[in-house]
Length: 307
Image 1 (cartoon, rainbow, N blue to C red):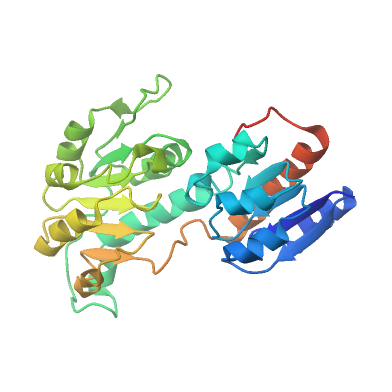
Image 2: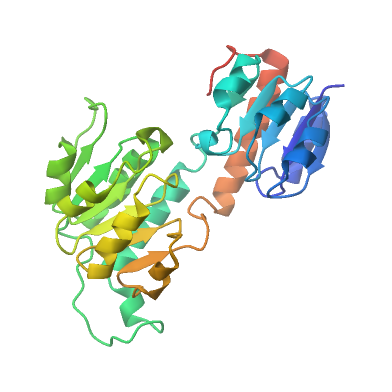
């Protein structure tokens, strides 16, 4: 009987475990959100499939101990953060798949929610703040810039339309001929936008959004970010936020503890990534990951290809 390793307990629901068993697979659950290298080396031996549901990082040693592994399914989009040795993995003939559509709506919903909260001065006017009366910007009549028009960027654009922004434009490495919104070069988009949604993946490169890009943003503009860590130069962002010239909201905290002293109306972040974490998204991700694993181990797909 083929066997599958599942890590953590968040993403793969018990009902989907049963679907894997009904499909003829034996399941081993390593119920830890961040298994160690030693634990994974032991757990992955003899496994045909591995559903990466935690926040563990794969190493070459772990892969070298995977004596029977044929497929890895990552429960999310950014598998490269957790499988940094993905090229080595695929060179071993192990297929990597992810669940790219699962978090799209949840993350876009979070981004729009936070843009609304920041631009309606929720944190200044609420119990955590000291203000009693402020005229807010909202989203209506604001110029919106989306950096990266992938699945989430496109979903954000759709969600924003009912709020009647003055304009929505985008920058992407590749122009989208089917898009109804205007393409702008990055420097132009940043100079024009009141709200900037940063929607690029880790492939954009470390510190893709750095001192120069931050300096090009309009005074009073809001930066909304939720993608891979290290995309933004955190020290450059902190320096801008401390001046109060721009504002920011993120699904990731800044590692420099000085950020904790900033007013929440200037900088708000989660303690750890949670933009994706809705009950509907988890169920969808669980369903997609288990179906993908069943397909990979029973039907098969082109080798070395991320879905």
